[in-house]
Image 1 (cartoon, rainbow, N blue to C red):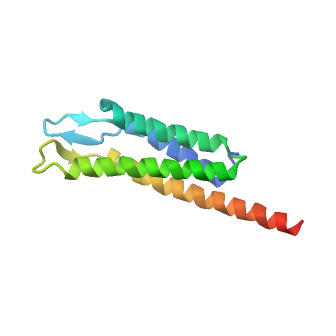
Image 2 (cartoon, helix red, strand yellow):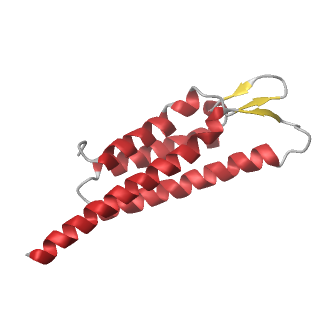
Length: 136
């Protein structure tokens, strides 16, 4: 399980979405207060859901097709989360609420990249198994 590269990528995604948003600020308000993921319930639920999906995909290593679908769902969740961050940071005119963007806003981007790399490795494994099945 852990010797496969997609397992490493999925573990990175689980750490990125399950731990880092609660230590890295998402943005800084105009008052100077840093906003983390645990300050907003919807954002924290979305990050926890991404971590749970990554761990679920990690432990379902025997069913590669299911793993591929779970990763796609996790990508969709991260795209929605990224869209919310972009909407939140760009929709407010004149820096009414969001004063400074934090590094935590990039976590969904890194998660999507690692999920795409994991899906590519899963696809390679599936193709390898199919080619071996043809030879028998």
